[in-house]
Amino acid sequence: MRLEVERRTLRLAGALHSSFGPVRERQLLTVALTDSDGVTGYGEAAPLEAYDGVGIASVERALGRYRAVLAELEGTDGAALLDACRDVEDLPAAIAAVDLALWDRAGRRAGKPVAELLTDRPAAEVPVNATLSALDRAGVAEEAAEAVRKGFACLKVKVGVGDDAGRIAAARAAAGPEVALRLDANGAWSVSEAVRAIESLSPAGLELVEEPTHGLKAVREVRERVAVRVSIDETAAEPGALGAGVADAVCLKISRCGGLSGLLAAAALVRASGAEVYLASTLDGPLGIAAAVHAAAALASRGPVAPCGLATLALFEDFDDPLPVREGRIALPAAPGLGVDFP
Ligand SMILES: [Mg+2]
Image 1: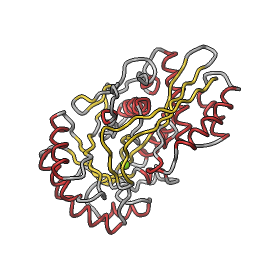
Image 2: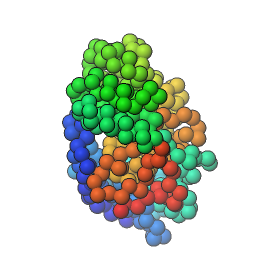
Image 3: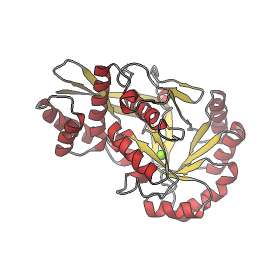
Image 4: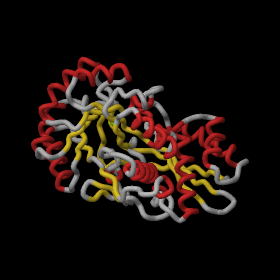
């Protein structure tokens, strides 16, 4: 099989602020995987080093090693091809790019959307949250009102970045009482800081607090001490985290799980532990977001999926969003494969 890799850059219209720092542009690696049948599948890696320490150079290097391995192989046994790649280097973000291309290829060959290869009755659409990125109260209020006008039922606010209380109060006042408010601290707090912050912020009415602190033990302690629902995101990468049952929900990402196959297996573990799942990305490009939409649509046929952090393509500048959000939902693409082309 022939693997081609291309580096692309997408600029955000405005900087996005988290407790790990601002993000202004995204460098992506788009991969094209072609077998002797001539059918090409496309995948993507979108590593975000500031977030989880995985840099684009290391993903590019791993994909170069996979290229050599895949050149020697043929066939449609995706699991065996991924195992061969993992044997030379097990880097989930790079494995995910190949996994996505394999699923895209399989869908194109079968003439079906990927979600229909994953389950018999995928959901037709996936609920998504808006992310409020302004660092000041007036800006957050404006963004919240705009998101509610557009039909979003869940708004996410990054916390641990300054004036959390003021911005959350502003978001609630502008959004009205019905809309779900989700916080994401990206692990900025210690256990005692998290407990204090959540207690003081919870009168605003919170859907859940994501990654209040890092680490299974610490998250479990926070959850035992607050009345608000708690989820893990970064901590989901810890060994044994998926089935640990320390949180009410677990945020899963295509890149961290090594692609669609890994994500579905991870979701099964989470659900068996009694926790809920939802998906997000690290500001992926269109192929990564599309893959997450297919996975979420498949998961929704077997249980609840909380609003997903996938409404981020509209944040890119000079970019024609192939997965537009309507009334707080992204429709499952109908075309074969992942159903989007990188424009
Ligand atoms: Mg997060």
